[in-house]
Amino acid sequence: MARLAINGGEAVNPNGHIKFPVISEQDKEYVMRALEEGVLWGPYAPQVKALEKEWAEFVGTKYCLSCNSGTAALTMSLAAAGIGPGDEVLSPSLNFVACAMAVLHCNGIPKFVDVDPKTFCMDPKKIEAKITEKTKAIIPVDLHGITADMDEINSIAKKYHLIVIADSCQAHGATYKGKNAGTLADMSVFSLNGLKNLPGGDGGLFNTDDEEYFVRANQCRMFGEVVREGVPRDYNSSGVGYMYRYFELPAAFVRSRLTSLRDDNALRRSNAQYLAEKIGGLKGLAVPHIPENRQSVYHYFRIRFSPKELGISMDPNLFRAKLQKALVAEGVAVSRWQTRPVQLQTLFQERTGYGKGCPWSCPYTSGEKVEYGPEDYEVTKQILADSLVLYDSIYPPNGHDLMDRYAEALNKMWENMDEVLGIEVAPDDMVLRD
Image (cartoon, one colour):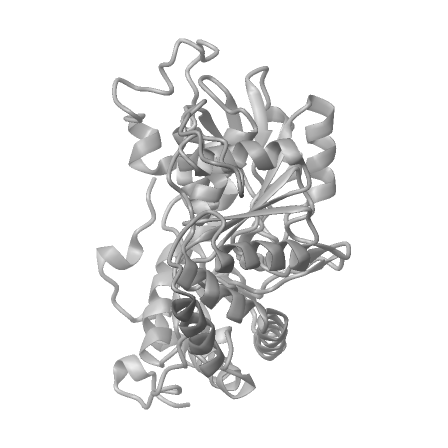
């Protein structure tokens, strides 16, 4: 058995992987063409308009708005939904803070629903217990490139007259029962962050088939004004809004990347499925679960570990930390995505909000203190303790040869488990917040 690299052995993958995105000549041509046009900004500038048209066609919705981040797109959606003081919005505990932050931006109260242990998406069975007379919307998140259980969620929403906003920021091109992410809710949003499947450095996209939501979202994007193409601007804000517009150069870059999105996603799927086959037989290791009615675009590839199945009596978080340290030494780009459930972040525990406890202390709330108890994040906490994710190493142009080396590195861990268990980890390696 080869000695682990962390103990002086030869690393399986010493040269790392090719970072995503690789800038192509076409990408440069699109951006240079935008520069030559001499237009840098504007809500109806040519690159922005073209991107919105092309993304709406790709997804299959009537309307699309571009903006400067996925978080902005979420805020626009919530504003379009009329979320305001005292309104409660449900989102999953395993997620980036943006969903809950956008709710706060609209003076709403975020509430949290735990996730399914296999798909990592919001668990529909746990939604109804969180609904009150103040609940106005649900934000299911298409996590790691797989859509949430949208039929079940939409059914619950219809029963309680709730608006559904799909956070598809990690799911560009994913499908659910043959339908595209972006078409499965009242409104949907996507991120164009530099590591997203469709990268733009930063940026966001808003999709809907509803004209009223479209108009309201555009108001939020434009200082609360109704700004129409070809109509002189009135400079009259009818509500609170922001400056969320997108810009010409990144819009041009995203347009270029959109031309290869389907091929890029196909390679992600190929890499992920190949790696899953190579390592799926390892005892005590679980690869991503993709239901038959969904097609994932594998934004992340999350691997779960069970020391108990290996006959090892050890806290899963400690076992995970030792594996992570050993795998990184072998040249495997594993890391953590989130270190605690969203509601355990200081903002929600201390309820600092805007100051003086707002919006939780707002007189428009139900009067009952919103509690963020363990029942809302038990599964999420387990997932964060016993799993690691692969990021752009499964992205183009990396291929099966890299997946072979990753599989070799994981097999090396299992063959040298005594060495793994002997690895010392620092407190920072063990971060899992209670």
